[in-house]
Image 1 (cartoon, rainbow, N blue to C red):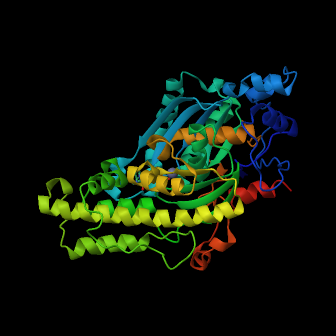
Image 2: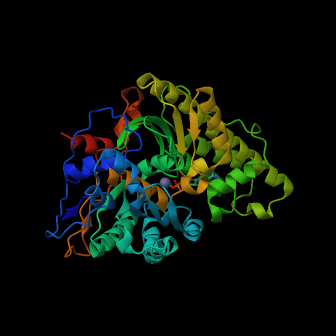
Image 3: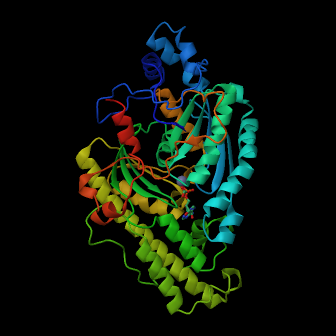
Length: 467
Ligand code: KG4
Ligand code: ZN
């Protein structure tokens, strides 16, 4: 038996009410919005669904204007849970975007020990941390489960074993307190948290999402409506930062990316001539595997003893060599981002000339050099850069709660789980789950052949259920 978590829809009345009450500005759909079907594959016995707060307040609202003035959006309270990779995170966020709490428990020690995320170890670490993390998020927000309007949880993409821990916890709470559940797409959450940060940010916008596992350029037409302009054909930029940092003997405890960014400040970015990837491909896709190899070769050819000697014990001369490699890597890695983003801006504006914003988010977007470089691209194209603060760029529960709120308000959520739902339930997890459909000009033959997609994209699921 499998339980779906997204996208589902409450009855039309509540959808209409939600739209009337809560719309900040009408999203610009690239398909006419149509009612979505409720898809609850594992319906429980007919217990009452706890009404979202806005629904009960609607009953007393005489008019749209009065409703809009009532500020009922602020009454919504969402718990967000994130366990898709190596951070166990939870947060409580109000419907108006006020962050009441944010808790993250990271697995740095495991990362140092295993040199990357080991799914089984990460699952155990999530399982150990999840109860405490969620409890602390509730305590810090000074709320209890019964105050919540719903629970949002990441259902993909990510590591199945890890996703399962968060989904299990979310369903336990939702079951006990009769709360609706919203299943969230991790990468959509990275993009949409920018709308919490900048309340003027309306669709459509262009987004670059850069993390440890993903490198995405998307045109966001509306909530759950994305066109993928580019993705990586091999590694993501975060993976390249992490591996390069490890090979350079950096202290990985605070993450490879931040360590490399720090060391790069001491280096000459033109000291090593790395090749910029994929210049011959006039599309918006990315590749970082080759640059990673170039870094490894640069370390080997200079006989840098990074394997045996950590950066903290390196001689001054050795440290300078490593810093030069770090700075040169960063320059080229980010130049690759800039080149693809420039083309993506052109493609996106061709499709929709009303785009005003360029969103850059995901863990790597917390890097200052990345932010400054991409701000140049934004300025050059008369776009406004929206880059969330670093702690909202790296994995966090706030982005899940916020994206949950956006979908909840649009009427997409699942009923509370059945009271007799077994603990060993097979959940509908989506480890490989594209965000949007590929833009045809951007399709890479090499990648289409390699990519076995397990789930249809979020966008196609939402559009599919609209017919
Ligand atoms: O979004 P995120 O927290 O988790 C994933 O969804 O993957 O991104 C994590 C990635 C890691 O590769 C990490 O090294 C990178 O973001 N990262 C950075 C920086 N901070 C985090 N990369 C470069 N510079 C940084 N300051
Ligand atoms: Zn992430």
